Length: 164
Image (tube, rainbow, N blue to C red; front, side, top):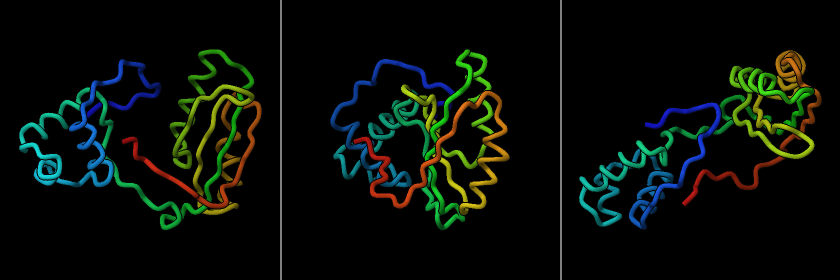
C-alpha cells in the first residue's frame, strides 16, 4: 500500500481502463469485497483482478482501505469548518503549522487553500463546549496563527468518497 505523506506528490495520472474503473467502483462501495466477488462482477478471472488491485495499490491509485465511521455515534456530533490564516508565510512557519495540525485528533481533514485564508480544517468534537476548549486551548495555542473563522455545520447534505 502507498505511504501517506504530509504533502501529496504530483505525478502523472495512472492509465486506467474500464475494468480498472469497475474494480475501483466496487472497492469504494465495499472495501471488504473479495477478489472472487469482484472477478464475478467485472467478468475477469481472479488472477488478473488481484494483479490489477496490487498494481493500483503500488502506484498509489488506491491509497488505503478504511472504515467510515458515523461521527455522531462516536461522540463527535459537532462538525466545524475552520478557516485559518497564518501571520507569516515562510516555509518554516507553514511546516510548523502542518506538523501541529497532524497532532490534533479533532482535525480530520486539512486543506491548503488560496484566497483570504491559508487553510481549511474540518474539525469534529462532541459538542460546543469541547469545541470551545479545542479552539482556545489547542488550536489557539499553535504558533503563527493570525485569524480563525469557524463555521458550524448544521447538517450534512452530501458526503461521498466515491471518485468513480
